[in-house]
Amino acid sequence: MIEVSPKQAVESQLDLSSLFYSFLFASPQSDATGIANNLERHVMQDIELALSSPQAIAENVLKLPSKILELDRKLADDNIDTKELIKLIEQDPLLCVEVLKLCNSMAFKRSENDVTSIQQALVQVGRQQLRHFITSCLAREMIDIKPIYFRRFGAEIWRHSMQVAFLASELANAEQSDSAFLLGLLHDVGKIAIFKMLVDAFHQAEPGEQPSSTLFKQVMTTKSLTLSALLARFWRLPEHFEAPLTLLANTNIKPDDEMTLIIWKANIISECSMLQQVDKLPQKELVVLLAQVGITEQEFAELHEKLLEF
Image (tube, rainbow, N blue to C red; front, side, top):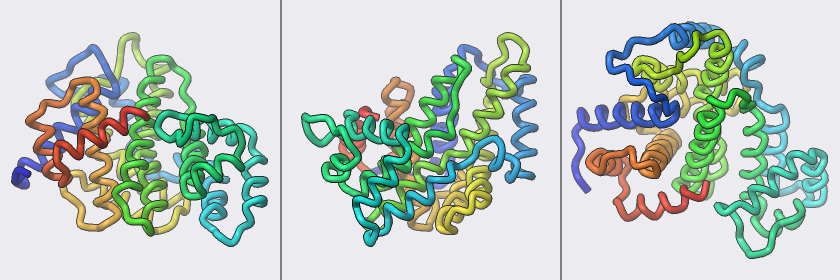
């Protein structure tokens, strides 16, 4: 494992963020000067307004499904009867369909036979994994993607969120696993909120304008994590969610807090994996980033194989 200086650490993370946003937007345009176009300036103004009034974003732009915390609490309660739990989940047919899709996906399928009911899912994948699936499906409701250009962006952001949730639960100990999964899933809600602002602004943009400048990518990196923390506060998520999101917003520093460090590592591993999948991450930079995260290239290769299934 190589030693990484503080300067190398900051530079490698900035490079990773820039590469990741280039991958997300996949724009044919290039703006080496970093000058924002009219579309980007409009969205950046919206971001500043959102940071000063996150309640409006939490209530109108990106509402957290009301059932998500209620169901999560009940799934965590071992005293609730299994039949009562199944009945509660089955009250939402669309949720059932999405949960069964996840149970039968390549990433999570446990046997050759398809899971065809919530009761069967509970037996086959277990209560904890079912809790993760339900949380994921409810959180997915927050993304409503219509314009074709942005469909890929939204899909990749969601895939990244799912990967970070999976990795965080793997990196955490048994007591932290559920909290780490939900935190990983929600750590990028600020990006999703900004994405929705971008979709709205795109309707009024000049033909051909797309988010492509380095300045906009930097704003997305720094401001979205702050917005995630503010949204967590207004959604009244438990305090142990808001604190790590606030710490993550300081993108230049490796966090000391245990839960924050788990999400920080999971985020870097996922971004590296997604970039490697499209051959956009130089080997030299990958080595430096893995040294910061504290895993070997062999360990990363094994995780990368799992993440390809998402």
